[in-house]
Image (tube, rainbow over all chains, first blue to last red; front, side):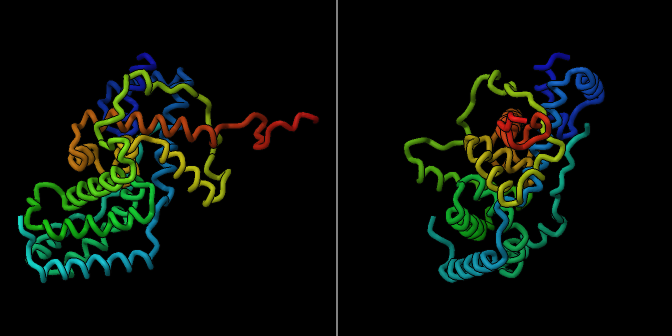
Length: 85
Length: 214
C-alpha cells in the first residue's frame, strides 16, 4: 500500500468501516511508515479534541429563554392557523 | 490504532412517539423535542454562522419551522436528521446574508485531490490539549475551525462533533455519501494540520524557544 492509498482509506479506517483485508494492509503500512502513522494518530486526536471540547455549549439561562421564546411563537403560530401556501 | 468511538447516539426510541404526539397538537411533546435537541442545533448553528446571536436566531427559526411543517414530516428519516437539515439551511441563509459577495453553498470548495495530502508531518506532544487552559483551548479550536470553508466545517461538525452517521449527514445536507466522505477527509486533514501549529512536539520539551544562552 502506498501513502496516497493509505490516505484514501484514512476516513473509513478511523470510522471503523473498512473490510478486514484492507485493514490488515493499512496497519501493515502504519507499522513501517512513520509519516502516515503520525498523520493517522494526530487526525484521530483532532477529532477527539473537537468532540470532547464543549465548544459552543448553550448556557442554561439562555437555553430556557430560547425555549420559552420558541414555545410562545409556536402558540402564536397555532392561533393564526396554517399559513397560506 | 483503532477506530473512533461514536459518543452520540441519543435515545431515539421514543422520538417518534413524541413527534406523533406533537403532530396531534401536543405542545408539551414538541417542547420535549426542543429540550432534547436545542443544544445540538445551537452548536451546529454557531459552527456554521460563527456568531452567537445568529446561532440563537437559527435555533428559534429552525424549531419554529419544524413546528409549522410538522405535518409534512414523512417519518422516513429520524426527526433529528430532518431538524438538522432545516437548521443547516437557516444557518447558511444567515451566512449568505452576511457575506453576499460570496455565494455560500455546500457545493463549493471542491478542489483537486492533491490538496488533501498533508504537507506538515510533525508529531504532537502526548497530551497537547493540556498545554493550554480550557479558555485558551476553546479559542484555538474555535479559530482553527473558523478557517475552514463552510462546506467543510459543516460536514465535520455533523459527523465528528454531533456524531451523525455518514448517511445521515448526506441526507441532512442533501449531498451524496462519497461527497460527504471526501469533504470529511479534507476537513479532518486541514484541521489536523492547522492544530499542529499549536500542538506540535517541541524540541527539548521546552515550550519557550529562543533562549539559546545556556
